[in-house]
Image 1: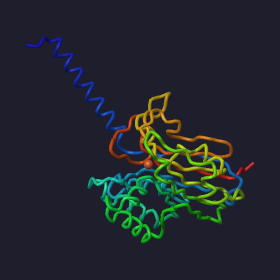
Image 2: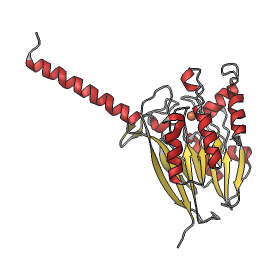
Image 3: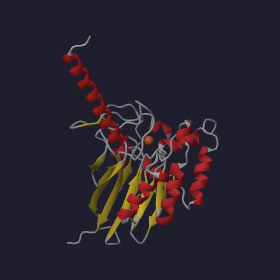
Image 4: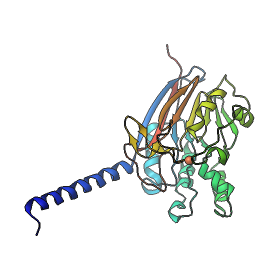
Length: 293
Ligand SMILES: [Fe+2]
């Protein structure tokens, strides 16, 4: 028969485990809004505010992502940028609820929406035999909503003086462990020259190649993909990337290289490992303003 001391130890362990489970659950559910501000005198208007979402992975917050829509509406944004992996290339039924497609449709009713392709959209496009009809369904639904993924394409918002570029990166530049480096002229070949008289926003899902993106001199790079490294271990940062790289150089936040700033989202959803610790899912809201001085 257990002694009083042993029962106390067992009870303490049970409470500690319950608190840990509760903590991980709270960290892994819900999302927060993160704000960044930048000054850019190439902007033609006094200010421009946009929301950035990456890596939703077909997750849902509230009925039909009502919480996401409400949060963005509250921020009074001028546009919404989607930095890839809104869907998930997985045959598990829970990833095929159409949550992302419906959310994008609702967003497009209210805002200009710019959608850059991620490796999951690319995978369902490359493997129609594994994901029958999925890519076609996605593109058809986007078309009904009046948009399409920007695949090596530029769209200009002339009133604001902003050029949006979407980079469509081949699978070899996403590979696990041994990712190939993109060539130095990769963006020039894919996107042509960057018109440096306008504010340039490059949606490039994989942040790993930021140093090479910066050679093309985009003002802002919007990336995701790394999910903040899943578990954030201060002060070391994100623990592991989807490419299974430990402590990825680029995990989340803002990074600068020469004249370029990369805004790297922790992502709004998750897949496969639905856990986040000190790495809350997020919607990023960016303010670009002209120097008022
Ligand atoms: Fe990704």
